[in-house]
Image 1: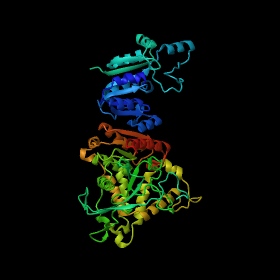
Image 2: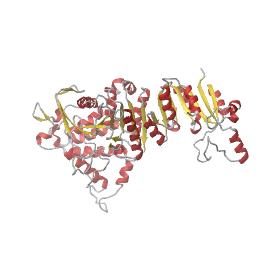
Image 3: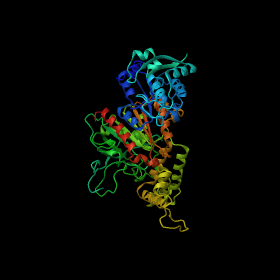
Image 4: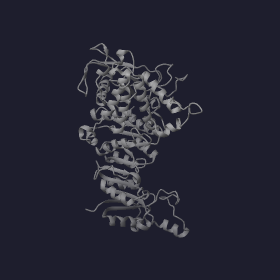
Length: 199
Length: 382
């Protein structure tokens, strides 16, 4: 299993009700349903992904976070709200974070670090917008319109009174590395945050 | 029928009539002492009777959902695009049951059947039937067929309402409910259109308070108008535009009031054909069943409370240009299911054909429907 999913599944308890924002082809939810006895929904807009979810028995709702938000979900109706590799693709990540922690008691967020040394190095050296394994697009066609660094994200959490319960940093292959743990904002490519409302 | 039967057709099918002797109590307070249901089935029921799929028809539908009745048939059943070998509702895997609902006019007991008490057609004496009544009669049919639990109950439009009602009335007798282009209740605008249709029928001089059978006539004109106005609500502005535009039947305006535009002659033709095959009292009954449908009513308008009884999984599909039952109506249903923690999947399919899109196999619609039903089949070992 992908190490990021391995980490996420440790944070999901049996019977948890989960909302997965941008659930893709439903791999994670499928796994959590079967292996952790969790229930829940995925939101997705990609038609092929939606079909795949339906075919594998993952409850998926066609819903666009940017235009429709999460207004149709009640306060505190989920134990965990997941968002893997999608925060950087929504129009207002700050509002999505607020909504995540309105409808769920806990959020799990993963996103690529724009301050990773290779991206910094690429920009410095070539003067062109960086591309990487985690961000394999051109500046003009990238769905990733709200790129940030780990530091940026953590500053936003502080500002919003969001508590970071834990953070794991992995490399592009989602592998743990001691270097990334040592100097995350420079050497970590992807972070997995577990967040909650400050009480 | 084409010269050779397509490989994905269920082929020649023969409807069967099931007679029910036990009285059935209806929501209106009346009782039908006995009744017939006309049924078609496709595919084979497996040993543990777990692969049965119930098809619920819409306003003007009937039991003939797939295949042909004879080699002379011009058209296959009304949902032949989705039912057959290799089609979304795959008859190689499922045992498909399709019936004409109570109150219908295609062989099941309805207003044009003979009332055993009077020896004459029921006419206006036939009780108003509700969606719940239909579901009850369908459950009795399931008993007769030896089906304890449907793999899925599937329907479009009014058929989707029956699927939803099934999940509330018999939560343990279905695994999946599929509601396509449907709604949890009619809007004022929907009811208004139904009322225009009913007024067209009842104000026809040939209606005779619903006893036209006794006068050896039918309110053809009224039924035709009812169908014309209904038909407009099944199509989208864009699909009508594409099909007819402002095209004239002849080259120039005639400065009269005959059918000059193609769309006029199309609607008249559709209305006329319909008035020859459909019973006016059944049309009144079906539209009323639509109006009354509102499972949330008993729960103070809170559909999620009604759904608390549900136990099955749901697939809800809507179509982007459907203005009769808009995607917003489907989403209302989905949101109530989410709030009730029911397992539901939902997609809005882009299709230009308005409400009628549920009968037309667009690629995405077919893909989704196939993927979902494939999973249902795997789940029941079919």
